[in-house]
Picture (cartoon, rainbow, N blue to C red):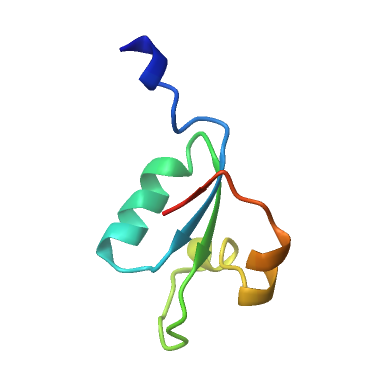
Length: 69
């Protein structure tokens, strides 16, 4: 059991989609990981603390992620 406790620690994670589950995932994972957000819906009105983590499609190709959720 101890092996699986740190599966989401010190990772670079991309969350694709900012619906209810995307925002919840971000709030959970941001504590111990480097988390980036992407959503292809341009009409999403984000709170300022989410905007600074939002990346463009071109940046997705450049950055290498450990996990994509």
